[in-house]
Image: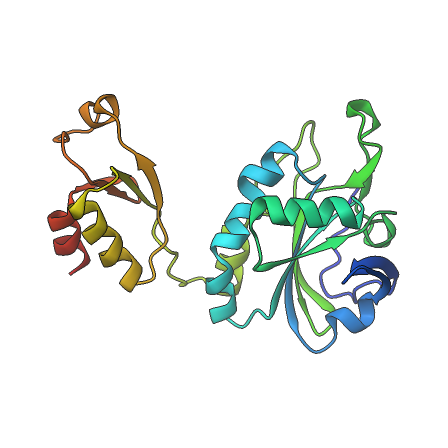
Length: 238
């Protein structure tokens, strides 16, 4: 049974880490002292759920966490420091501190080291998250112990709701556009000036036909709602 360690101190261990081309020792007691840290731990770098959902969402909500008193977001995995550095670069997640627990020392001290030899992983971390204040674990969210790789409670949204129940989440925005489209450029300006992040995809005739009322670019969606073009976006934002 995996133990909820809320109310306990972070285990004091020393981890070998690579910084600026040199090996250094990271003392967890010192690392967590005097600051508020959100930690999420996962089975491994470059694995599907970890790469497509767990890390990206914490990265997306980094500014929201910062706005509610979180000093640092830390991702822990039982991988070596070179793999973790490569994964961080691949994820373009500069807002997150990727902490390599290559020997599983920290994970084992947390009681979260599990055997995933059946899928060729060896010893890895169970998926969980925690809020740590000045070295004390205030809250843990541990994924249910069942087959597979559950991802239900250690996500960024659950943690943010715990910290700030009324926090306003950034909108999920998607835009179909074309190169050289003046209205697309205007839509980008409308979003950029408000510092609203969005994903963009080059439109094809087929994708535009699939959009209700489409046929022109841009076509913008916010939180699943079809807004329309640049004029409709401007009206929506007002």
